[in-house]
Length: 257
Figure 1 (cartoon, one colour):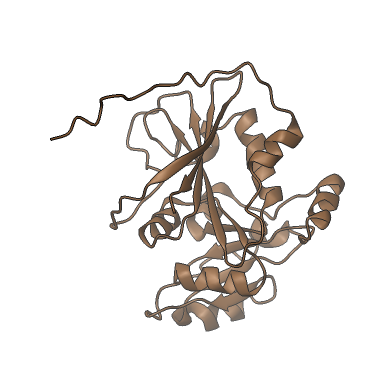
Figure 2 (cartoon, one colour):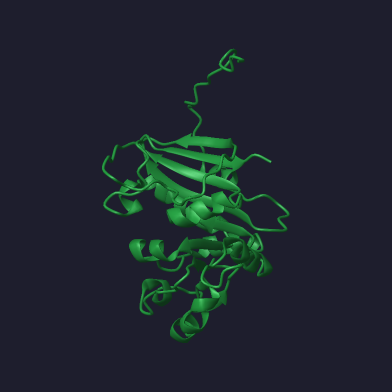
C-alpha cells in the first residue's frame, strides 16, 4: 500500500497579524451571485468534542466567539434553528444596531434577518421570547400533520409554513431550503441544534462549517455538534483559522466541490 505520509508538510499557523473589524467581516462574507441557498453552520465545541456545558452551548463561549456569532448573523439573510435549540437557549429575535441596519441595506438585505425554526411538532410557547422580543415575525417551518394546529396556535405571532416532503409527519430540510430560496433568503446561517446539522450533512446540504474550538475540557456525556443515524464522509477544505488572546480557535471549512 502507498505510504501517504511521505512528503507531508506541516505549517505553523501562529501569526503576528492582527485583523481589524472590516477584514474579519470580509472573511465571513457569503459568495456573490447566489441563485440557491448557501448554508453555513456556526457551532462551538470543547477540546474533547462537547457541544454543551450543562446542556447549553453558552457555557463554552467567550468574547471572541460572541463577536463572530453577531458578525455572522449580520451577514445572513435568515437564521435557521431547531425547536429544541430555541427552547434550550431561550432564543429571541435578532437585535440590530443602526450602523448594522445601514450596512445590511447597502448589501441589499432586509434590515433584520428573521429566525426560521425547523420543527416537526411546532410545540413552541406562544409567549416565548422568540415571538415577544423580535422586530420581524419568525418563520415556523413545519410538516403537514402539524400545520393546521400550529397555524391556529401561532399564526398571530409567526408565519407557519408547510415544509413536508415525502412524509407528512416530517419537516423536510430540502423543502425548507427551497421555501427560503423562493423568498430570496439565500444566505442561511444554521445555529443548531445537532439534529438539524446532522440532517443537513446527511443530505449533503451543508456548504460550510464555522467551528469555534473552546480551550477547555468538559468530559461527561455532553453531545457532539451533530446527531443522527446517517453517516457520510464529506470532504471539507479550510477557509481560514483564527485565534484570539484567550486561546480560542475559529475555523471555517467549506465543502469540496
